[in-house]
Amino acid sequence: MTKEVNSVISALEEHKIQVTALHNHMLTEQPRLFFIHFWESAPRKR
Image (tube, rainbow, N blue to C red; front, side, top):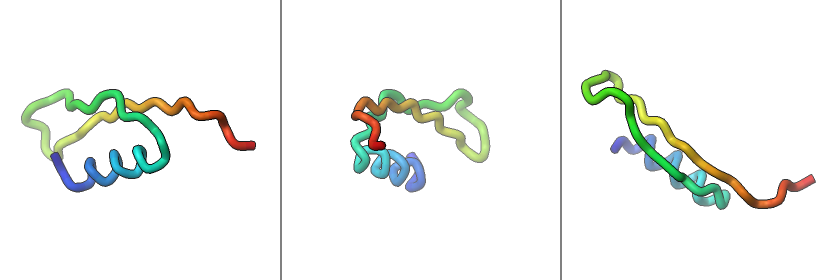
C-alpha cells in the first residue's frame, strides 16, 4: 500500500471517520488506484 493511502486513512481516523473498505478494481493498473469507503456518524457541528 502506498504512503499516500496510509496518510489519507490516518487523516480520516484522526477525525473519527471510520474506514469501511479499501480496495482496487484492477491488479495491473499503473498508477495504482485505491478506492476508500468511509462512514462518519458523529453529529454535525453547526
